[in-house]
Length: 108
Image (tube, rainbow, N blue to C red; front, side, top):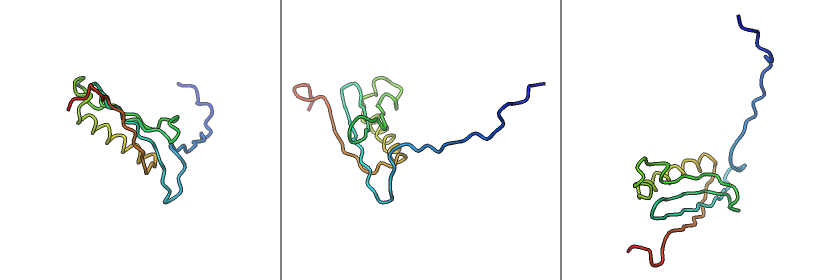
């Protein structure tokens, strides 16, 4: 026989919502920092100040083979994942900041 459970009172479940509070018809901005290197692609969404990370997905999180981390396919999967998560957080507009290797190292 097991001992009777103590504390049978109903637990208070607080309803937590992630992301900013939004009124209907209001635009919510985020900043998408995209970094494309020769070895990986990062898609990182923050709030406007850049301090609060909302979503971060890399190409390596989407594909299993190491050589595919920086492929366009992995970047597309990462972007789809970020878009889905942004919709869930009610972010309706993104500013895009793009960083990539360039200068004399770019291959054209």
